[in-house]
Length: 392
Image (cartoon, rainbow, N blue to C red; front, side, top):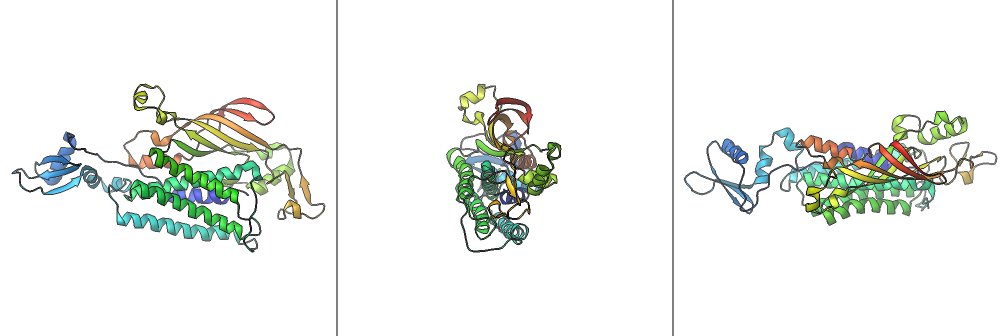
C-alpha cells in the first residue's frame, strides 16, 4: 500500500520532536580545571574561590578553607551558566521531571491529534469492517517497506534524543524511543486492519521492527548511529511522457503538488543506508586518516514505472481494485516495464559536522534524514550499470 501514513508521522514528528545535542564541560578526578571555567565560577560567586575536583564534582571552597559552600558536577555548573535560549537546546545533565513530563505530554498529544487527523484524512471515506490481514509484500516493488523502515528509524532516534534532552539515562532514553516508534506504527497498522480498503500487513510490521531495531541496536552496541536510513527524491516529469493515460494515472496516484509528490511518488523516491566509515576506524587510525569524519558511503534502492500496486493495471473508475473492476473498465499498461534500481553514492552525516551552536546541531539532526544529491552509480534491471554526475 502507499506509504502515506509513515511519512505523515515522520514529518509531523520531525517538526515537533527535534534532536538536541549535549554541551558542557566534564571534569574527571585529578584533572586540572581550565582557567576560563574557574573564572566563570569566580564571577558567579562574586569572589575568588578554590576549585577541588572530586568524583567528578566541582566543590566551591571558601578562601579560609571552611566547609564547602556548595557542590555540583561541572556539567551541572556549565548548564546553569548557559543563557536561557542556549539552555533550552541543551540536554539536562540530570533527570528533569519537568522536561520528562513535557516530552511525554508532547508526544502523547501529538499522537492523539495525529491519530484523529489520520482517520479524517485517510479512513473516513472508506468502509470499516472486521479486522483483516492483507499480504502486500509484493506491492510497489517493496518501496512502501522502505518508507516504513525510514519512519520507524527516525521516530526512534528523535524520541530517544528528546528523552536524553530531558536528562534520562541512555538505557531509558533508548527504550522510550523504541516504544514511541512501536506505538505509532502499530496504530497505523491497526487502522489499516479495520479498513476495507487496506488491511493489516505483517510485512509492514517487520519493516517497522527493522527501522526501530537498527536505531536502538546501534545505540546499545556503539552508543552512536554509525548507519543511518535516509531518503532522496528526484521529481518525475509525467507531463513529458507523451502519454496522457499514464500522466493522468500518475496524478491520481501521486498528486500534482510538490509536497504530495515528495511524500508518495515512488517513481521519484529512493531509500538509502548511509554508513559512516570513519566511525569504524580505531582511534589511532582516526588520528592519521584522510577520510573526513562526516563523509559517508550510501547504498540506495529505488524503482521506476510504478503505476499500480502489483502490476501496471488499474480500474478506470479510480476506486475499485483491479480484481473487482467491472468488465471493460480495467486499464492495462503491461508494456511499461517496472524496474528496480540499485544505487551507490557518497553522502554527508550532518550530525558529525562540528559546531558549538546547539541550535545548529538540532538543525543538522533534522537534515540528516535527507540523502544529499551526489554522484552515483546505478544498476538497473535490464540495463546494466551506469553513472550519474548528480543523483537526487
